[in-house]
Length: 400
Image 1 (cartoon, rainbow, N blue to C red):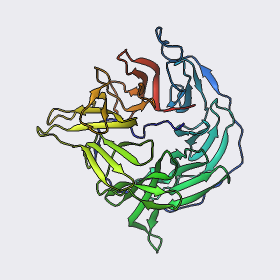
Image 2: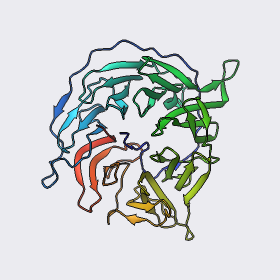
Image 3: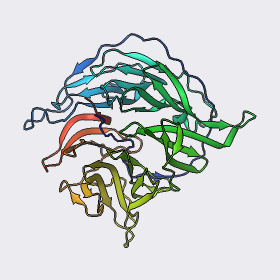
């Protein structure tokens, strides 16, 4: 089963233009397997809940944490108590992805991709990107140059990742290939302002399409890569949709929700992949000049679960309190609160059935943009109090 997961942190973002830099493409090596470290079990950093089900979580949860000094990959069992550190890398683990097919984990560190089993065993070096090439003194667009943006296909046979373009690693062939190269140089070999760079983001549930982030000079948008033809198709919005998104279960619809102001307006959009039509479901601005901030949409049956908030006109708080809501697909503005309270979170992971969510609650004295990590909290939809699962976490994802 493919479980939904978030793709962006959630402070109230003010997006501004930046001058990017460019680079070229290079081949990747596929080295032999390397030795594996032993997983390390540790006690939880927070007291265990005293009045909770024996297995309050529907699945195990993976997340990043620097609680031991360096960002590493961790696993929390369904009992919401047992924590295991799965990696012991000398350099920080900055990203990971869980295979929907068998729970194998891929993670990125030091511009390399490793895979491990759900218990942390079987560490194997999958892709080595070499040293990250610096093209200028400013380091613009470094995220497009180093390995990252991991996205595993639903059948577990292909791992898409960004590295000077969109790459597919085939587990059947045991090799990577460039599917969509970045265009960063002109014919004379000079960095060009007519650049195009790409990052893979999210496979459709049926595995036929891949959502890709596309950036060019003063242009940013999402596009759909048809996997069979390896050509762009369908979604090509005129405006830049942002910032959290998910597929419908039938792979026919994309939901985009924005909590941003600046270059991108807040709101909620629906994209029909069959017709290519964009529909504005929730407008950015109300008649009284207040704004509608929305994040983390997830279709559950005939409802769309998401976070919703409005502001006082002219007031843009750094820590927007969100209400967890659901709304029928036939009338998105007919929202029903799932809880009576509000939550300030940098990340949210819905259970597939919407019965609970995992939120990242930032510390009060840190910047939510510079440090999006925080306490991992279980938020039940029955109105009962939230339960702190661990004190420091980042990028939670469901596992098997």
